[in-house]
Length: 125
Image (cartoon, rainbow, N blue to C red; front, top):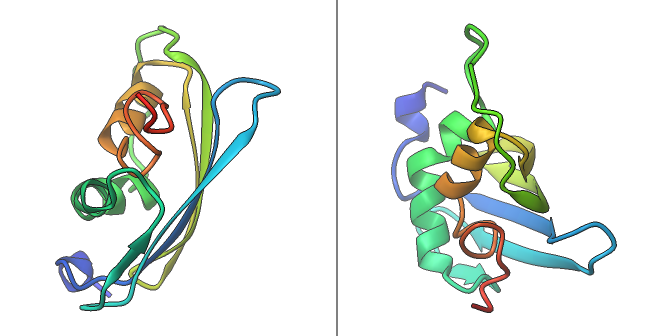
């Protein structure tokens, strides 16, 4: 399928997010599912925001096109780690998110509603 065929709000979503906010902290598991054109099912704090973020940034983040190496600022954003698995538009997703440098922080912020909140929170703020 071409990217245009994957585009639009009628994409299937079946994503599981496993978030750990710090080493040794309990794991939080979030789920976001929707069959094309069907109802949304999720335990995320902002499921509509998560869908909007995935629709806008998911293709590029989950399935990046190889290119030249990126230069990333060497800053540390926190110990949070999230693993996103499942399917997006019929394609397998297995992406790790962290806050270890500027590029990773940008990826995290783009999909923050899917990852449970802002900057790694579980939405409890």
